[in-house]
Length: 124
Image: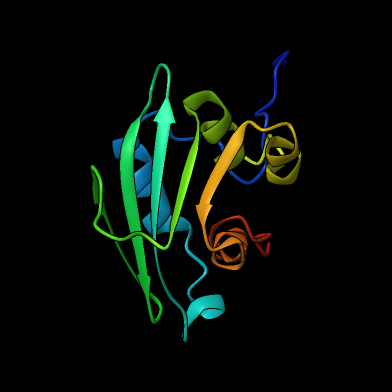
């Protein structure tokens, strides 16, 4: 009998690096929710496991890469530890924002759309 169970039923092995995150984004995107949506996000992660990456959503297609992107619609700045907890569904983005642990630059409505794209509940 195992003493510890996976911490998240939706994501058994959360990404722990920028490279793993880019692969995760591709596998978890809910294309149905973004067919007519276009936005570019930049994520700046501080601390261990941190780095900078971008993701562009364009009519249901996702492209992404490491580093900065020109003219992002939204820039998120947060600790890598908090970000990886978010993608593992172990942290609440609204709570992190209220605690000033996520900084958002740019369009708040575009920022909020990201939750529906990647953190939407999965169907069984």
